[in-house]
Image (cartoon, rainbow, N blue to C red; front, side, top):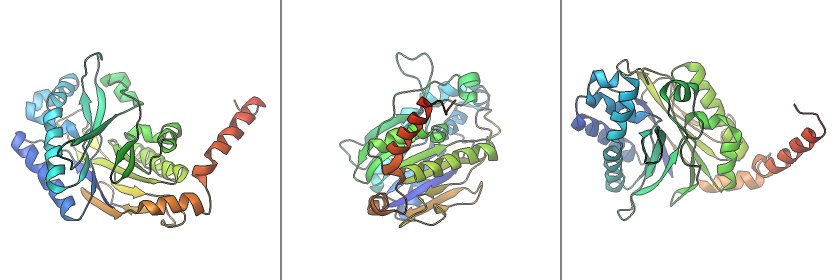
Length: 299
């Protein structure tokens, strides 16, 4: 398969037509380049708040509701594009208010080309950053899941989630072959943390990890006003993959698509015949850590 991951700039758009035209152009470009799976970033849906006006966009609480109000419409647009171009798309994540929850979750939908079931599955963020929990009051959502698709078994770790080994491991143990990491970080340090986490998950799980960040400035939104990142696709630095672990990567803060061809048989082969067998030996390391803890060697 060919994977396309977006380094996506957030624009202040005047109306829904302008928003839709931007999404159509981005999907058309990636699909035209032969992509089978397109990945958009975390909080890319905050772009929708500009449609409610600058005053709403500039208010943290109002912007949550403005983005959530258009979430379903935006997802249906992407589902139509997925069907039209015959691709799978991880939609940009955004806030969603649900019955039974007082506060919004951060949710990304995977949509596909099947007209009978275009909405494949969604994934909510699991661990909130300090900004999300202390200032914005966005809350954890539904549990992690592996999404079965014709392209393979896919897991989603939204931004900060990629920094926690046990979350990635939970998906690997459920059979995930590809992990998607949509991200939104406001500085080089934040981007680096997610990038390093994504590369570590590729190493530990002997899998492919795809990072899609927001990039550039959006001064009209205090929630996503600064965005630093580079789109990239990572693998384990071992048999069948680049020695650096970097399959493809864009330049820092450079908008656009990064594409790479991935063969799931390479993942199966490196897990079976690699120079190291991190995926198979995880349980051994876990057991050794528990043994050390029982011996009083760990804090």
